[in-house]
Amino acid sequence: MPANALEGALNGVLHPAYGTHVLRSSALFGAMVTAMGAGALLGAALYGIGSGIVGPPMMSVTYARVPEAVGGRVFGLLVAAAPAATPLGVLGAGLALDAAGLVPALLGTGALYLVVTLAPPVFPVWRKLDTRGPAEPVEPPTRRKEGFPAAAGAAIMTE
Image 1 (cartoon, one colour):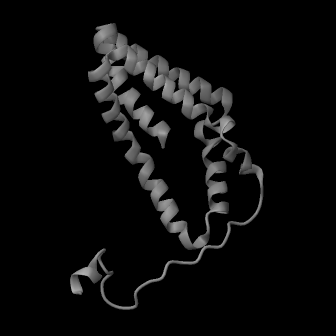
Image 2 (image 1 turned 45 degrees about the vertical axis):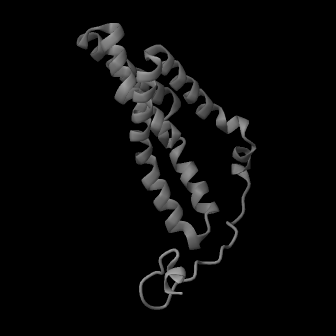
């Protein structure tokens, strides 16, 4: 999800700002975007099929580790949060661009990208991905048998 936000920041705000303020040419900006796309394709070809190397194993680990009772909530959150991070990155990049300027915004975004990229070898939780074992059981949430769900503070209002 952080990568989605950073990609939104770069592609939606910072790259176009770079094209406007530094390149000062839509043709050069188009060439820059084309070169980045070509580099991404070449990198994917050399490394494997892009996120196919990371996405399926991560989802497999998630399926294995998330208890069945809360699986719908967890996967619903993952599916909703990843695309929601992109506009947040665009917003943050716009604010950084206005507050600090183009070069500091690009350097800050690059630094954040470096932190996100280095998280797996730095944080010990990533080393536990290879351990096997079922997800720990979780008690399913209790449901009310009839009527609408109680609103927070409903008991206070009825007293």
